[in-house]
Image (cartoon, rainbow, N blue to C red; front, side, top):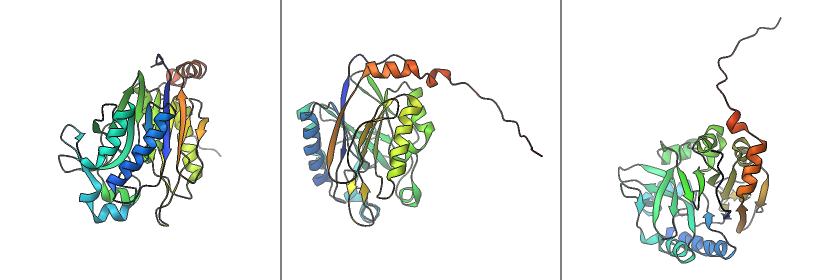
Length: 283
């Protein structure tokens, strides 16, 4: 757990405004932003939750066929609507993590994080385990397993939005040896305080980097507040975008800093079973 990666990793967190139900268009927007991130040196690019179909429950309810990406039993996704994004990942040699609504081979519909690798291959890598509110629970089946993505020696836990509100989700990633945590998300206008606390806390709790991507803008009922950021292992923002407007923020995850923080703040090593609790009655 305490062995840091050998080399730095440059990452990008993206915020943008997808169009509800327009997967090919949104993949093209994502491809453009991936190119921008790669030009700034990024090897890994994280885009928001449900970015490919847009986080817009009315559209997701109305037209599942148009908004879902079909996955094979092994998780691979081969859909022409992804061609622009797959091409960008391949052309730039970057790894992309992007949110999508996925229809699995067994019929389950999941709020998923796709991984598109540097060869342009796409896979439904992780299904959101902790669904938020009645809308998501009506649309999706929760995932049952976590996932860790390996990129250039870095172990990166995958979470999606509400997952990151639960300390145990980030801790499960850390228990699997994660050096960082990737969080494609969909925070609406009015939630900036929680947005800025949760992911900084997950970084600090687990002495790991956190890469947070979020949608921005949208219609009045489903309007998002940006704030894409990368947090260091003490929970401080290395970079952060504004609450409005499209943005790509880029930062380098530093193994030396990771090792320094983990040597100084040893919570992951110091944990132990705390036992039961006494009940005291005061008079």
